[in-house]
Length: 171
Image (cartoon, rainbow, N blue to C red; front, side):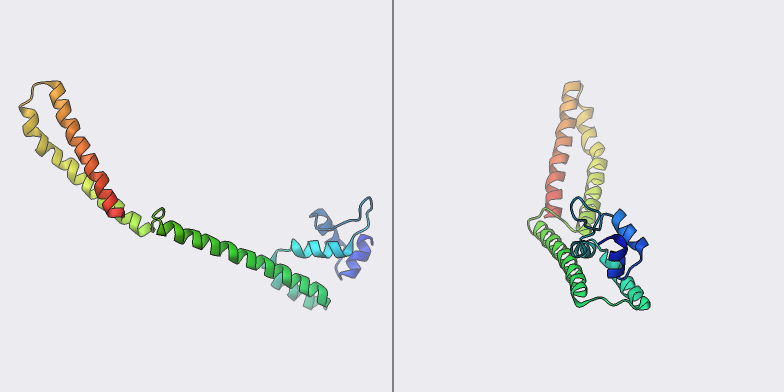
């Protein structure tokens, strides 16, 4: 059937059919401009934005359109399938999140903020104590190599200690 006949069949305007054609939502018979009505209705339903279903139903009621039982069932099954697929996707994402938390690969944001704030305090305390600890030792040294070794030893100790403390806080 041509576009005008298809428009009458589904109780829509020819302009609407033109929009469907431009959107690639119509199915044509091979080597022809004739519309495959059944395949086109199925494609229209499959590619329909289900978030606009309420508006579509309301507009159809206002125009006095009636959908046959088969078309209504196809619309319902398409919307149901999309909703179910979306629900399954979110269930899978939630299960993945729970698994990642259980194996320790994922932390809640509050835990991360707590560990960072605790670590910040520890780093500040350790760095502020360095002059008090190192000054007496460095005052006695005259060798630059020895001074460097003492400073490096204390920095390495602080870094190692911080690593253990962060592991303890996040565990």
